[in-house]
Image 1 (cartoon, helix red, strand yellow):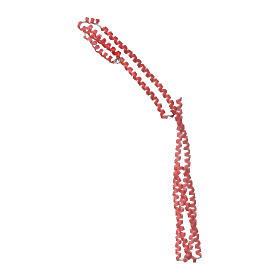
Image 2: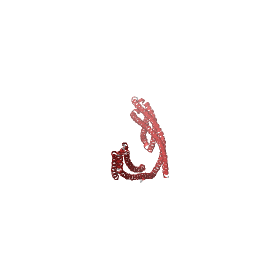
Image 3: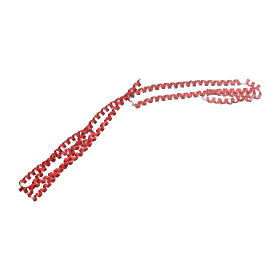
Image 4: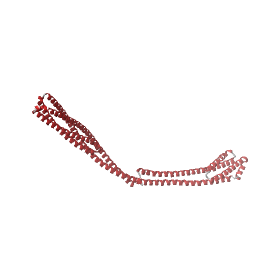
Length: 493
């Protein structure tokens, strides 16, 4: 039953048992002390009664002494003991009567003693009157013939009976006092021994139970501390690996940012080339318009157109090379975004933001790839148109006379060229916008990776602190286990 109790309940039981025993000892000691005090008061009461009885005899002896002195001398000054004794004897009788009010037998004796004392005092008064009125001889004769001696003997006998009664009561009360003292001593000794035995038994049971409970708790704490230490070690190792991985990813993201900036610069150059190409197409249109007025200068203008078309072909080749670079960067960005997404999933909640950024980068890479395909298609069309234009201008050089007739066709071709160049410029602007967005996303991804790296470093530091705390818990649990075993062994000894 005690094994299911808590430590507080066991300690409360350990304190409650001594308190209950001390309370019982205090109660019995109080009862014994109260009885002893009552017995002591009764003994003092008896001693006071015996003193008053002795005072009564002393007062009567003073009365007789004063009587004899006055009878012998006839002088009034010898009546001093008589008067003092006569006044005190009745006072002491009254005191004895009050002290023995709880004893019926003594009350009967006090009544008889009062009558005897009254008779003795009256006889003494008569002797004094005879001495005063009739002289010495008559007084002596009165004393010799009177009952004074018998009255005094009766008083002494009654007082002796009362003294015997009080002595018996004194012996009885002394025996009661001794019995109360012995009982109190026995209760104190027995209660003390019982308290020692009960407290010792309770201490053995409680300390034994506490030792088992604390020992079990210490073992569980040691096991938990060992598991915590192992988990902290694994967490520290994982945090270090995560920190290294995030450092590598951060370096890669910075490289991606640099590459994206290069792509943005290339896109800007493509836009500039598209503008220049558009301007050239507008110039060709103005040239065609001027050819309407001066057909003779058609051949020279056609040659200029051929030159521009050749230049346009070279620009188209340059745009194709740039698109190859953009396409290759888009594929690498897509691969890096996929790897970053995988790393973000492995990082858990910490890499969630990094995963979102990586997903956006992959989408931008897909858009760049799609835009690159469209631009490549447009460039192929531009190349085809340029080849057609070159062939048309060569035919025009060979047959200027047919220039007027084909002039409309040339005008239409330049219109298509202008449209194609406008489409190229628009695609270049889209590429520039996409690369700018890609650069912003890369910068965000770099910032997120740096945050992940900082979090990983903090996690590594926290894991080290956790490992240190787990080691301290193991040491403390071992020390606590040692103390519990030491206390249990000392208690058993």
